[in-house]
Image 1 (spheres, chains in turn blue, red):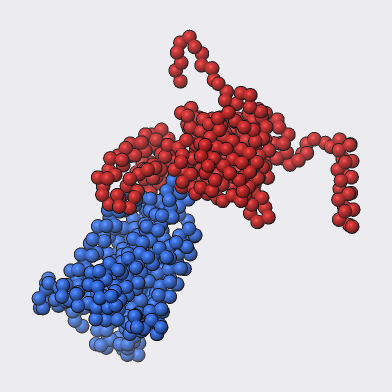
Image 2: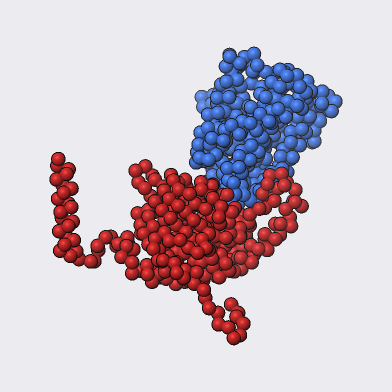
Length: 330
Length: 304
């Protein structure tokens, strides 16, 4: 058993692009669910819209990647308006239904042979990230602190990614501490009361949906940029719920909750994965109980078990305030 | 109130010469509603021909359960749609205007079931009530200097009101940790943050202990003395008697009587509304015969 290696992997998993992508997606969900009380079950749809539009605008319209990023963000804003307009006047559950359905519609549409010319069908798209690579200021080599070692490409992705996360956290912090954020939190508590105080609740919910969706899109755009391809199978509905797991793990309605949660989620996922693999490989766990192919499933079970324990013993998440949670309107 | 020596303050009764009948016109109305109808399927919940609220007095809207008081209230404040009718606030047509705009115009309401914003502090609840905040706009919110001064003023005003409503000691607690009565006070104080012209209270005394009810009555009186118009829905006739200048009675969706408290309690239509028609007056012979004949006729018609 190489415990050192397992620990290395787990810690670097908390820093690698996956943690960044889910941190960004969960920051968006935090704006929706944590602060405004909007149930968005289709965050992955925003990621997909952002990612696809960024890729397509580079490949089809030959714009620089930076412009592609903006196109992706704008498209996600439009997506939010499209989904929000009919649903935000209705009860909260309608938004949940529409967002989850819309994210699936988008995924299945880009997979459809009809749009193959533009979207690449099930194979997706690649070859749009020359700009990403050419912008990389790190000469090839290995970078890192202590035992953490990353290639030049990884380092570039990590630096860009964490900068985006920090800027996003700063933006959310500035907004939430303001009177605008106060209105959002009040809507989460009781929107009729807020309406009775002269606030245009619909407009605030729409702003929240667009803002949180843009963070989702940013996650998607960053995802496709650093991995140099966009594939429909990466946008299954499960991704939304992983982002929710990150959010709840870290603590809802906490500025750093989604970030800490995402780092923890990926560290735990890697830790359980590597530990199980080592245990199976070294015959601590006999083949009759589990073979190496089952590790992937079992680790998710363990994460699920961990979540249940978390909800029992620390329902407010890592950074949450238990007192606040107890006041949840019933 | 201080008055100069040598003069005795004579209260001018704004209702001098106003007939005590349903739908009567008032000398200086702040709200005028005409033909307001609200139907839910086959049920007509509200059918108000004409209704006015006199400015700067306390008007009570009473009536038995299911009379349509809250529905009428909701329609006027933009929280429900009407099927017909027009109504104005302060001379301006606000028919069908959405709730938040009505509130911005100075017609603010509270709810029968108190809506404290639980996971916001008491102070935050109060600050939310202030209208026209620069920091509530998305872009301006990002730049603190754009709203810092206004926020300070709002906080000062909130603290004054909290002091007045004896909630200062709870200032930084979550509103969810307040008692039921404190929530009622908070909701009233919060509504006042917007400096309304008309405050509409939906059963402010419901589920409140008698001592606190007295406190709330005191606050309502003070508001009216300060020039605010108050309309409130209430069941307790004692409360209505103590503070109301004018009473409006609804039953089965219609306004059946209006007047001062003294005339209302003697009005047979009001007693009918509350206790059912002809509850205590024995029918005289002629009336009984007439009703029987009517019933017979009805029966024979249906048999044909």
